[in-house]
Image (cartoon, rainbow, N blue to C red; front, side, top):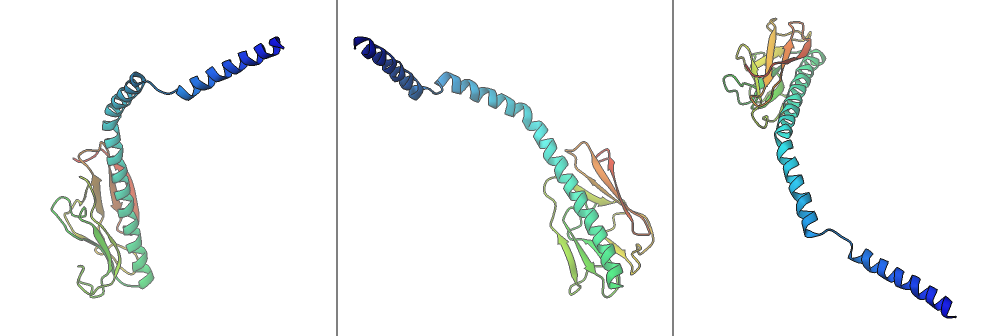
Amino acid sequence: MRHENCSFGGSARFALRRGAQGAAAGFSLIEMLTTMSILAILLAIASPGLASLTSANSLSSAQGDLAASIMLARGEAMKRGTVVGLAALAPVSGNEFAGGWTVFVDSNGNGRFDAGETIVRQEPPLHGDARISLGSGATVIAFNSRGFLAPSTLVTFTVCSPSASKGYVVRVEPVGLTDVSDSAGCT
């Protein structure tokens, strides 16, 4: 009997010790401080790359929104059979479209966005240091009822940021087709 009791008592004590150790298991203060300092170092190393990534994503989104608005203006002009324009909301020289833009139906045909004209879409201002400009400094482009640029000249938008290593060039051909290509950033 003593043999059984001893065996039971021994494993019970082992289980009790094991359970006590399992309940007390965790991180020591030194382990936690070491882990936190390693995380802080990794964060410090990664943050410049994260800022660059955020800036690049912002630019990509801006050029995508601009190209979509240009295509929308062209499509609306052909669908409605009238002139539809894309106008800068708060133009600043050298950064005409960073303040946002409006796709509108130019019902009076004067080539400007006037009060009372139908707004098809309005884009808010860009965040950060992104720039969108036209090479000519113009603040409005317009498409005629056939989807061609009016006047029929090549239009080139530059989408860039001083904090990003690359930018975009959005070209609108006189026939209304849009092409987006990479550029070397702001020049």
